Length: 473
Image 1: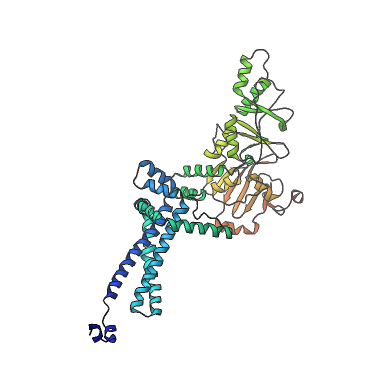
Image 2: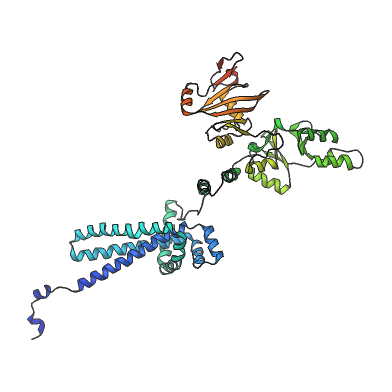
């Protein structure tokens, strides 16, 4: 008789199974390894995509170990991200499966599902996601360099799955009309401007530097009409003028160059400089002639972008261009100095008045020709910028609905504007006062109205601010 025939089957079932302990130990070890891999993939995503491209390029130039690998992987960020997502999901699914099997040894089916759901979720959330991602945020560069090579090996190991899922994702995106690009740009204009503001707050960038950088960012959104010297301020000479008259005109206006017109300002034919005029007067053979020293100029629409215009002036080596409206009428002129001032700020000469002069912390005298956006930025206020006007003078006329006189005031949203100087019908300067909250509330009942200070000292209220010029009269 064999040995097996003497041992009942029921006794064999009651013998402890030592294999359960071994399975448990191996399962726990596997889960710990998988948690580590989950942390690796999670932190890799943060480190690789938070490291700026310019810093990667610098590390490559410096020959830092791992930098070239990072650069190669970031050349195809879509493939890199798919690799990380595939690896992370495989690890997490495997971890859940093993944990369910382990809990099934000691618990019922329902209990093992609950234990796996809450236990593995907690484990992954703390040690596989939050902690490693926080570490990667604080040590982006060093951690990216450290995990670059292992991540590259993972890309090779998961290559078949990465290609498969990449193909599926692109197919799904075509069906739903989405973009197949998972990644986004490394940096945007808004992010750069936020960095500049943060740099000023931290003391890394001076206020003047921040203002210049802000003007550079605004420059490509600026049009010729906002930069030009308006027609009323243009000094020009007629084509029929003598050289002596042209020199006299330049000296009186204190300009190095002036436009030359034929008939009227709507027909500007070129530009002359004082240097050429003096050379023509002193050294020309025969009778001095203004026409011989006239240099051609460009005629550009008032809607032309300032950055494009600057490039065009540089290419054509021009110091002055003429701005025209849609009907071909001359609106003004733009010099190279005007363009430079848009970036570096006003360049004042001699007794030239500053466009904005502070009298007190919240009170400033502003020239009427200053753009509304500049007034808002300098004073920290929020006057509206309409299509009908671009300057402070235009805003006042728009609110008043008529011509205004010296001494009149307009209030809008806690801002009081008092007309300081008027030349004929043109507002030359105004005093802008940012009212205190209590004072603004007290004046709220007359917000948006225009008051004129009469000779007898009585304040007379004008017509409705939205009225037309005819209504106001």
